[in-house]
Image 1: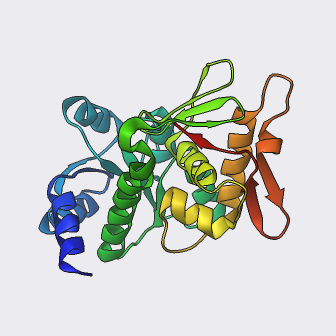
Image 2: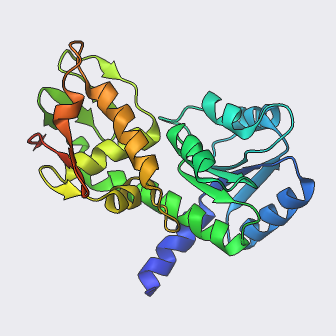
Length: 251
């Protein structure tokens, strides 16, 4: 990594606030201290109620959210968060089954890390999610250029999608990133690995089914009242991936 990249990373860390949500006080303490040592501003809370209180007081760029907690579990907490404008979320759980990870990703998590995790891996995942979050929208958001396709309108800076009738379509953060990945590369076959890397920034295990689930959800939201539209805009290319079929204009 060159000096400019290191300087960018250090500035990102020093200006970034993280929130750890975990009922285990030992994990909270160790994780908090490790991340503080690497330049982040970190708070830690034991449950969803304390998390919401913290979010009411301060702005956070990313939440590390434990799944298995007594009372309200991590998935229920995730469901209550604003996945369009809220902080990024990394799920952290002793449950390492693929289906559990897919559920978390489908609900809008930006990454999913199994316990016990090496602190350095968690650090790398945090930086990757934050880097992807900042970089993915930057080229399109510059100058607030709008993107248009088949009557639809996308505002990358505001993270808004409007249908041909000018109705705002609610997308999760993950769905919006996936849509941007597709419309940045129109009429090209994109592999699942490419889409996963560009829309989520996960740099470890790849979960093809997670992309399939997200594409399915995005297609439903791109479908018109007559039930058509989503399938036509996002074409499945057998054994290869997906293609965004519409022409995209920037203006």
